[in-house]
Image 1 (cartoon, each protein chain N blue to C red):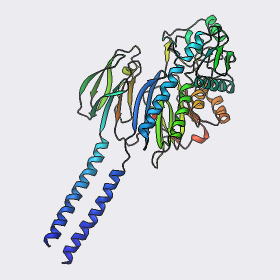
Image 2 (image 1 turned 90 degrees about the vertical axis):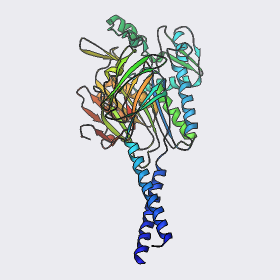
Image 3 (image 1 turned 45 degrees about the horizontal axis):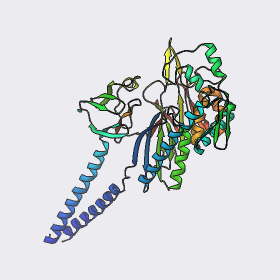
Length: 336
Length: 124
């Protein structure tokens, strides 16, 4: 009789264990609402988790498409196209959002002493980065283009924008992705988002925290198709990178990349890439461009001034980072 | 054992086997890799990826066409109508979390599944 009861007891326990296992299976996280779209000249990857995910996803896509329609300089109906067409002629009425982005761009241009320059277009043009007809321009061409890159020539008054000289042209490609991520964070805040990951061409918004874990963000190896290291990040953060591998051409064994030094008119070549970890999206986007121009030592110095953390990969593929990131950066070769 | 005990024991054993089976199934299901192909942002095809998968697939988008090859548990692009052919130059991918994007053609190939040290995203 006792033996029989023991068997039943054991089976009872097994049943309890089964229930626990079942509850774990049911607790496995539900898949996110996802979307992949093409905007701002790049690919956008969206993952939204939590109760309100579908509604948030809809708003997020709407916002990205809205900002894209204002700033796409290749589209004849965009605000930026209109401003550039009327450079030196007249001011143009634009959407408040466009004004807001241009104001942020000017703020960053001033604070980086012009290393970030939203009027870089004439230089990108002569190096062939606008029409992908890459070439090395003459000294005279560079000098002439440099004369059209004074960001103080951007005149904003309430809802109008005017570029003083004919030939000047805005390019918000170095700040709009980050600015958009700031807007998306606001949407997530308002709609009680739990967790999200939005990647606009390498500029990432991490929102919330994966259950009990950290976000793992790979940093691209500038010379190989793999990552060079991983950043372990907690909580809501923005991560942006600028590198010489995204758009470039090689002539006589020298690489010319799309990030042009606004001080001398030549493609920047001081480092391979820089990654910025910040709590403001537009900061990360614009500062990664500015830091790429000024190089490793200056960037590590300036990062403190802007209260951001950075990872720099120099021209020998050596990795340096801000003191604050030393514990969260894991390199692929095992060094941390 | 009485009849009722036997029945109870049987039910418990069945539930136990079922639970273990389901748990194992869920774990194995996660470990598997899947190739997800998107054209213009929409998923057009999903293919389980294992060592024996061998196929050549042509994917069309509004912008152009690419051809990918799956072999030995890896994927690469062998042909593309894009001008820069960066997608071809990228070579083989095989791990969950890796992807090939042909920006001009707006086609992406990504591998999903549970990887030991899977990263959430890549900054570039």
